[in-house]
Amino acid sequence: MRIDLHTHSRVSDGTDAPADLVRAAREHGIDVVALTDHDTAAGWDEAAAAAEETGVELVRGMEISTRHEGHSVHLLAYLPDPAYPPLAAELDKVLEGRSDRVPRMLARLNDLGIAITPDDVAAVSRDATVSGRPHVADALVRLGVVADRTEAFDRYLGWGKPAYLDRYAAGLVDTIGLVAAAGGVSVIAHPWGRSGSERPDEGDLARLVDAGLSGIEVDHQDHGPQARERLRAIARNLDLVVTGSSDYHGSGKADHDLGVNTTAPEEYARLLGLAVAASSASRRVTPEVVRP
Ligand code: AMP
Ligand code: ZN
Ligand code: FE
Ligand code: FE
Image (tube, rainbow, N blue to C red; front, side):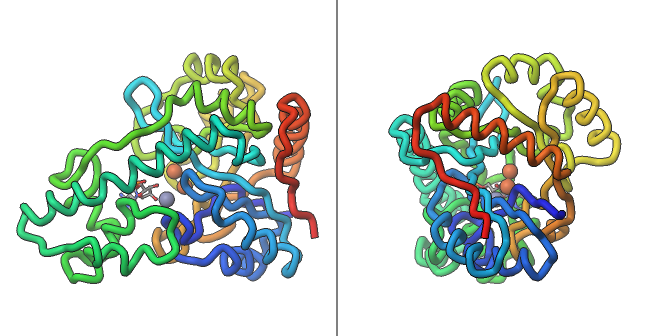
């Protein structure tokens, strides 16, 4: 059984429509896939219809942009009620912060002598709920300024680069609480990815467990073999669910093919068990796993 619990469609910054992503999962021999677009449930219905059709099991999720002690942390939320008003309000704020930033980034790029307009970004973000940096990157590729997204982030859009600007992110501990109150479960995405440092450390994670954290994504392309081993040991100590996922973005991210990392069936079963408990404790109407 092959289980991939972290993927993006073009409802956020992936390049496949949600239905195509589910079909691609089938073609890659994936049995269970979670759609986890950034800060939105907008792709869920389309993905669910495709899951019924193709026979792939679908977990509805999202990846929420949060901040903890000054660092950006991505939180995977599985099976929450997205209409729970406090969660919906927080997601709106995050989405607004992302789209607000685009015109300011374009002004920075214009100052650098790059003629890029809001129309150039709209042309590549199509059915995305909001445009973000990956869409600005795609527009720069189309304009011939850079070769690919990676170069766009390395030269202009990444942290500390000339067109980088901060944006709103929800507080991590508060968000874990919102996800639980919405009847869902929380897993920290690529905890030691990107930053390169081993933060959050075991002590930080222990405090997050007290706040309601259920798991950590250990097997992710941003983690080398050593980071994976250490995170696995921490998960064992703290009794956290261990997940593994591709963080697929279609053609938007190289080396993140569907199923490149997977979650063990026992860990997936534990996660679903915790989701059932969270759902009944919350008294919210939470989404079901689509089991064709
Ligand atoms: P935003 O939400 O607008 O801040 O954009 C963040 C998203 O950009 C991340 O979730 C990734 O999908 C993508 N991203 C961040 N850094 C890079 C990078 N160095 N290369 C390619 N994509 C990136
Ligand atoms: Zn992304
Ligand atoms: Fe992420
Ligand atoms: Fe992601």
